Amino acid sequence: MKDFAGKITFITGGASGAGLGQAKLFGGLGAKITIVDIRQEAIDKAVAELKSLGIDALGIQMDLTNREQYTAAADKAEKHWGGPPQLLIQTAGVNTFGPAEASTFEDYDWILGVNLHGVINGMVIFVPRMIKAYNIHNGAINKDGGHIGIVSSMGAFDGFSTDAPYSVSKAAVNNLAFSYYDALKPYGIGVTVQCPANINSNIGEAIKTRPAHLQNSGYYTSEGTMNMLKSIHAQGMDPIELAGHLKYSIENGLPLSLPHDPDTSFVRRSLEKVINFASVEGMERVREEERRMAEMMKNMPEGSPFGAPDPKFGPVEVFGQAKADLDWVDDSKKKH
Ligand code: NAI
Image (cartoon, rainbow, N blue to C red):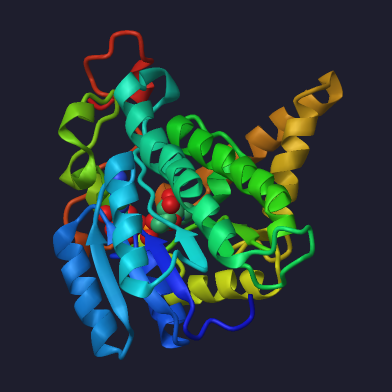
């Protein structure tokens, strides 16, 4: 897809952060924008901002883990614009951090529910509609049958001790995207999965959208852990710049967008680590790298690659710890 003017566009998580950046960028190029989000207030604010920029925008509140709500939102947008999306961007996502061994079913259900099943819901609801509306069924390649963008994460390429549900969800979403990339070629529908590192967004407050029935968590979270995350994300890439990287990949039909890893060195290191896992010699290299990383972290000013937290976000606490009462978790990993 090269020309975005007039394209019917549907963006999940479009009321904030990366999704709002996409709405501004593609809307600014003349696309017709639907943003869907779980937070009505954020939608109202975002739609007002988009309209003030001259963007043709529709906001719909829904929880993308709820298939009935998702289908109703898809119907509503289709009725409004006169067709299903030509550009579908699945951006909504959530995270929370803690030791893998402290994780509860609810930690997995919430994060996988939004980050993986939300994207699966989008695929199952929209792909048939997009194929029927825009594509040639005789095997010929329609050059512009639409495009599907998905926001994953650099976390897709590695599993860290405190992000098991998140990195699982993102690794799965990458393979989902690559499966659809392959499958949708005959219909001329492109698929791009974007894997960012740090984005200047509101994801540090994601636990505020965690549903009541999935509150049981093994991870320690507080205003302080949220403040710490907010301070870190404030240093992230601007959402409109990030959307520009997605646009480039869509225009060029690239299945993968690596906005923070232009020379692919991070991804290469992650893949190399996995290969090293399979041999005795490889594991020696892995351990050497772990020692090097531990040394580097020790020598980092403020003990973090992000430096001292910005006091404007309020008092901070370390994130990624387990709750104090989990008696099987090592003391060093627990909140005291
Ligand atoms: P954000 O929190 O600013 O935006 C995400 C939006 O998704 C929010 O407006 C939220 O209300 C919405 N949302 C959450 N649960 C939902 C649900 N069940 N149904 C509908 N909407 C829901 O966060 P950000 O950073 O813009 O996140 C966008 C994507 O970027 C996510 O997939 C995230 O995993 C990914 N990402 C973020 C990074 C970061 O540093 N912020 C780094 C790498 C990837």
